[in-house]
Length: 161
Image 1: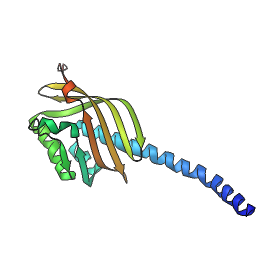
Image 2: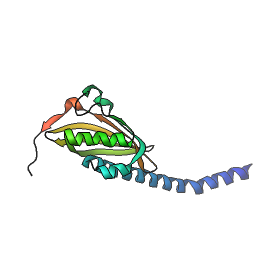
Image 3: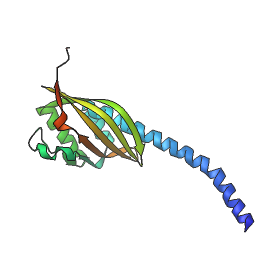
Image 4: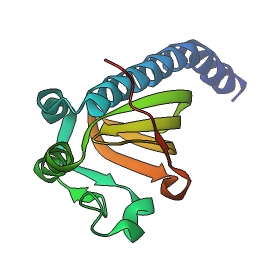
């Protein structure tokens, strides 16, 4: 029995560092994938976004539910094609791009949380606090979830060219 316990602990001691190393690589890869996605999303780069979304991805902004009729709200899209159509609608009607100022980021269980503020660029510019949670599975975005302080948004001056 003692021999079995010793063998078990030895095997665990050998396997644990390798598992931790793989876990760290997965963690870093997940953050990198979400950061690449956020870069494409804020630029509204439809070609890159199409390649980054899983076919059955979802986009959900439950804080937009009371904005019905404003820029196509509420912002709830199911499937890659619906998400891209929603972004196209924004581009044609109001917002041409976003700019995130990320103050903090962390990953847990395949979800990358971006905390900060964003500026919506278009015919007018609005700045608001936002938390964006991006779920990555097999290197693809399966869910984008926003929690936006729409009521605290402030209009900002356009920058000079």
